[in-house]
Image (cartoon, rainbow, N blue to C red):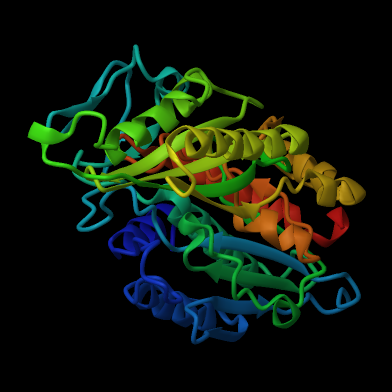
Length: 404
């Protein structure tokens, strides 16, 4: 099956994760695709292909005879899509792009003057949305590329390789993709996640990440008699947010610059909540960001009485660079595989995280590879077909025994 056909099949499944469910997987619909993926691995001839109770899909391709001594390599992707935008009833279409704007539907378009990446894909075929959903290239493109590479290897037994383990996770988009990953059962000595952006991107640095919940307790009095008595929780919540650096938000940062990101706010005069994510590549700056929030909470509690502001901070994952540096041959091997596929690799920092970040800290070194996708998590998401095809070629080169 061609990688495009596989991808279009996978995006027809709604696998949106749910950060509030408290279950694993966070949405049972992920298991529908998981069941299909396990069946495909089995049909290809991978051994022990199965989906476990948590919705993780595993299988492994035996080594070519004579190459059993090569350490097992893992390839990992995730099946869920982001909870921030609908993944229900995705209607993809393939556009032969000749330049200019692309009308999507629902009043949305890809505008060449606003999307600098578009100009790089003139003459290629772009899979786009109808403007009502995300596409799901993050990370069903990664799944499709890994599976297509595995199928290619099973039909080309002359290509020498060691044992290859495949793992597909649920719930990566809500930071829980590594929660129940069976590293021991997976059996790989090292691995790569295929969960990045544009073709050629190679990532082994990611954000240190934390979540923050601010709960503000106010005192509501009838507005007619509230003078010197009311403490409006909504206004105090606004005051908390206003004390954070206004330029240190996603809309004003790039590269290695960290940020505070307000994701949700709700409440009334009595109780208000603010939910943030905190991100920084630098460990000291990451700690400083959390300390800044603690100082703001302490200041407001001193100003408005103790207990007015409650701050909950929870670390989510850490920069995997420290775990990858002792295994830099993985980065060099990936660069060589990209070049053999005719793609010049680019080392870029991840402005986010992957399952690989946590797995690296749990003993499975795991750099991240591109999928080819652009504009993840929204209706303007797209992916060039040619990029997916190149990633299949790159993965085949990556696992070849002579590159070990």
